[in-house]
Length: 186
Image (tube, rainbow, N blue to C red; front, side, top):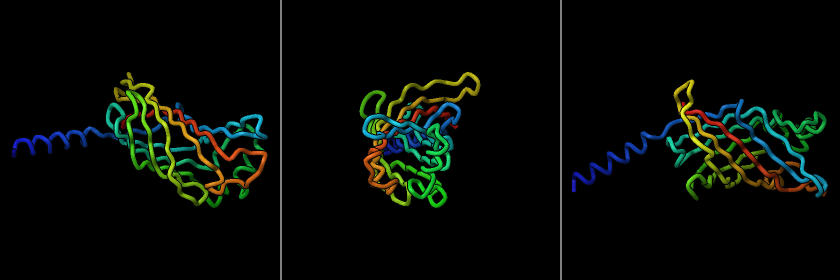
């Protein structure tokens, strides 16, 4: 019995030790979004300043994510619209400079897919959200000899639930998130 308990404790410590830190590569990652405009088209944009860190195994199982997105970095390819989105009418970037996400649980849903549940904080409001994830692949980088992982996270956020923008017929309430990540093991 003592040998079994020792073996379980040893295997558990190996599993915990197998976790490592991964950081997003900003040059090869993108935090994007799309929202309906006038109920006939979709306006897309992205945030250019973000930091995404994960703690995960070498196969990206049981991942925990921390995300920090700077609201001033919003870019929809239209300066006037971007300035309006940074204003108090929407993100109020001066008062709320960051959008954050901290995962609370990870559920493997397939060989390369998972659900990531967590708390999204935006515009002074925190709500639970679920993101769908896909591991596109994991390789050993020839230059650094460290692992790199390609991931895609998608989800939908109700902007009104976070107090971003008012209720208007010109904009959809739901914002589609698409995050493409290249993460490097540290």
